[in-house]
Structure formats: structure tokens, C-alpha cells
Image (cartoon, rainbow, N blue to C red):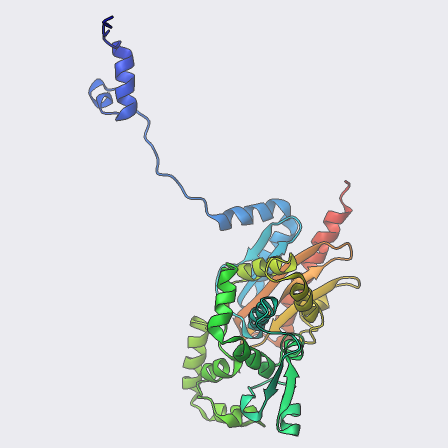
Length: 367
């Protein structure tokens, strides 16, 4: 049976053509709505908006502290239960200094989880292995000519005491900076850079080249002070402009969130690293000083070099836990400032107090 083709009604034909290309609309003078280009949503704006809605009091206080600080400061706070993050300059890169020891520990404990290292493995440390600045282990090495320490002891030294030699020895034991960065990248920890050894980074920041004598007495300071002031300033400015140990406050609280949740390491390694952070002896006047009794802090500090009135890399990052178990990741990172130590510490104290005040307000709300 032959089918007779009927002509399509004009109105339907025009509609189809207009939808397909909109060309006939020009002839027929039928207005066609313009299509705007698709706008991409900035995740940072969304996260900050969520934080503003969830914690307007804390967001306002963090902004006030950041804007009121005389220097460059980055602050980030993440509620580990609710998931929102509020920040001030949270995506910019900041020098970590000894905060970067966390990522060396991450790589080492990852190697332990994989069976490539064991906590009871020993490493012999000799005078040539010593670093610069703070290194409590140096006395044992110098006293005996060599000192055998376990991986577990070195982790404790690096995280709880911020021992530069312990960190550098661990860095070598795990395979170097590239291996640490690979461990960071494998976990997709955006905004986190693995640092060079303390020995290399500190000498380069000062404008010096490494000499064995810098591990002892005041040789490092003496040679640094002999350099022309302008040369030292250029070296320090280069470090601040392109920190080889850069990390963002937002990247930091994201990493701390995942560490706390057990998503970076195995259960035993996670527990060990967090415990070593709780046992940290450094920074008692920083975040910790803003916490009332019953609150705990698992943290890592970092402190950079000073040139005249300019201080660099003054940091404290960690996980603050309320008595009811509610936890917050926090990072306060000061890149550069001319303020006193007391002023730098006070901004950290105020951030901790702001977190406590917010938590107490929320806990007091009727269910």
C-alpha cells in the first residue's frame, strides 16, 4: 500500500527550523533568545559561601584577623564533621618551613605500610649527616661519634621535636624529595610541595653554600653575617617569591582532614603520626595557647629565617579537637612580617579562640 506524503504544516516546519539553527527567524523577524556562554562554577567561591552560611561568626573573625595582621598571613579552618572550610588567602602558596616534615613522615610511613621500611629498622647517623639549626640528636652523634636510631625514633624526633637532622636522615632513607612528592601526588594533595632537605634549603635561603662546619657551633650564623646585606635580602626575597617548600592553607587543612579520617595511611601509621603531632614540644605559645582545658591539638610548627626586622615562615597547622570529639583542621601560615614574635603568636591564639567560641555557640544551640 502506497503511503501518501502530506506536507508538514508551516507552523511546525518553521518551529523545527528555528530550533535547529534559528536561521529562518532572521527572515521572519521572529525573536530568538540569545544563549549565554556556560559559566564555570568556582569551587573556592562555593566552599567559602558554604562556610559563611554555616559559620558566619567564625568566617567574620578569620577575615578580621587576616585583614588586621601587619604582614602576609594565610588562615584556613575546616570543620571535619560538617565539611565546610573558611579561609583568608587560603589558596596562595606559603613557605612551610618545618611543617614540611609532615610529608617526609607521610612518605616514610607509606613505605612502612608497604613493607619497604620497618619502624624498628636502624639508621646510623654520623657527623657528616648532621643538618643546621634545631637538631637535638646532634649531641648524641657528636658524643659517640655515631648514633644508631630506629625509624620510629627518627619520626619522633622529626615531628615531636622538629629535629632537622632526624628529618633529613628520614628524607634520605625513604629515597629523597622526589619520593616524598610522589607520595603527596599519589594522594592528590593539591597545594602541597615536598621540601628539599633542611640543610640545603636553609643554606640556599641564606645565600650560602653548604659546609660541614655549619652543623656545629655558630659557623652558619657567622658566615651568614659576613654576607652583604643586599645579597642576603635578594636571597631571602627569592625564597619568599618562589618557596621550594610551598603549601597553601586550604591545601593544608584538606591534607589534615584526610589524615585525621585515615585516608592517607594505614590505621596504625595514621594513629602513630597523629600521636606524634599531639606530643609536639614546639609552639606552646601558638595555637595551643588559645585552647581551654579539655581541648587537644595534634600539630606541626614551622619557623623560618629572620633578616633584620623581617621574619619569614612562621606557622602552626594541626587538628583541634573539642571535649565532645568535634574536630577542626586549622592552618595559620605567616609568609613575611615585621611584627614581634608575640604578635605572630597572638594571631594564632586568636584563631584557636575563634574556633572554640564558634564551637561553643553551636553546641549551645537547642537541638
